[in-house]
Structures are given as C-alpha cells and as structure tokens.
Image 1 (cartoon, rainbow, N blue to C red):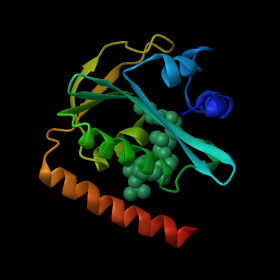
Image 2: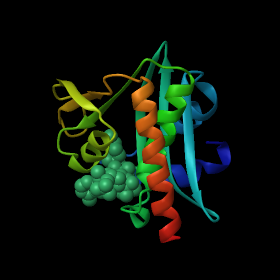
Image 3: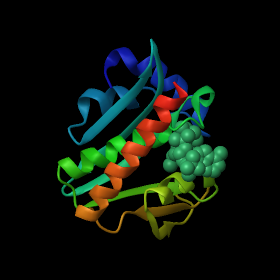
Length: 164
Ligand SMILES: CC(C)(COP(=O)(O)OP(=O)(O)OC[C@H]1O[C@@H](n2cnc3c(N)ncnc32)[C@H](O)[C@@H]1OP(=O)(O)O)[C@@H](O)C(=O)NCCC(=O)NCCS
C-alpha cells in the first residue's frame, strides 16, 4: 500500500465496515508504523481490495481485510488472506491471530476455511456497536500447514484463471 492507493482504500473501508477508519490511519499504517504490512489488490486500473497485519515479535496479527462490494464472492478476499499467510510463513511468524465481529459470519467462514480456530472472545470490543469480538488463531504454522497453503493457492489460482 502506497500513498497513491489511499483514496481507494478509504473508499473500500467505508463501504466495508460499520464505522469508517479515521482519517490518517492508513497513512500511518503505510509509512509511519514499522510493525505494519499492508497490501492492496489491483484489477486493471482499480484497487479492488486491501489487507494488512502487524508483525509483533513472532506474531502476525491481521488488522483488516476488505474487498470492494462489487468484487466480492470471486475469491479475492481469499487471495488477500492467502497472501498474508504466505508472508507470515516467510517472516517467519509462529502465530497468526485476528479479531472478528461475532455477527460477521462471512469473514468467519473465510477464516475457518484457512483453519483458524476460535480461542476466545473480547466482550464489547467494538466501541461503535458494542459488539463482541471473537479471537481466532491458526493452531500451528508448520510444514503441513504450508503444504495446505500451497494446495489452496493452486486451487484458487485455477479458479481465478477459469473465471478471468
Ligand atoms: C470478508 C470478505 C473480505 C470476503 O471477501 P470475498 O472476496 O467476498 O470472499 P471470497 O470470494 O474470497 O470467498 C472466500 C471464502 O469466504 C467465505 N465467504 C465469502 N462470501 C461468503 C458469504 N456470502 N457467506 C458465507 N461465507 C462467505 C467462504 O468461506 C468463501 O469460500 P467458498 O467460496 O469456498 O465458500 C468480504 O466479504 C468483505 O470485504 N467484507 C467486509 C469487510 C470485512 O468484514 N472484513 C473482515 C473483517 S474481520
């Protein structure tokens, strides 16, 4: 993610979450936060999604992932998540965690597909709606999990190519 992407990123963020990110957040994440690693996904000339995580010690903490509503259901959220998981493996991280709204079954389905498990919750974590967060994590970033990622990547790339 670079400064040139931020208008599109803020727009997708505003379409994706109950409360839009405060101004300045993504500028900070893109260039002022050494822990942050953010990516954008382009289709042609258009940014269609973005995702980011913080690398804190040996932990990758996924902070956000979002796809423009017009581009959902095509495997792109999965592509963004898969890319972050490969990066986590390369760092190397030992643990990947995230928080997700209890009501966000779509995102939870995506995370479960990538073998995240719910390990706890934070009561009323989201101040905008007072909703609880579920804490999800991948039990082991080991060699079998890397093989799983590779097989998921091959399947997803074949799917995306067949739909192109
Ligand atoms: C969550 C999000 C990123 C998924 O992106 P997407 O591109 O639509 O998802 P994909 O097409 O890659 O789907 C991948 C998996 O997600 C899950 N999923 C996607 N859409 C779903 C839906 N409508 N209902 C249930 N599960 C769904 C499924 O597990 C799917 O795998 P499958 O196709 O084998 O069933 C997207 O819905 C989004 O931007 N939501 C708003 C922001 C958000 O909630 N981010 C997560 C914050 S924790």
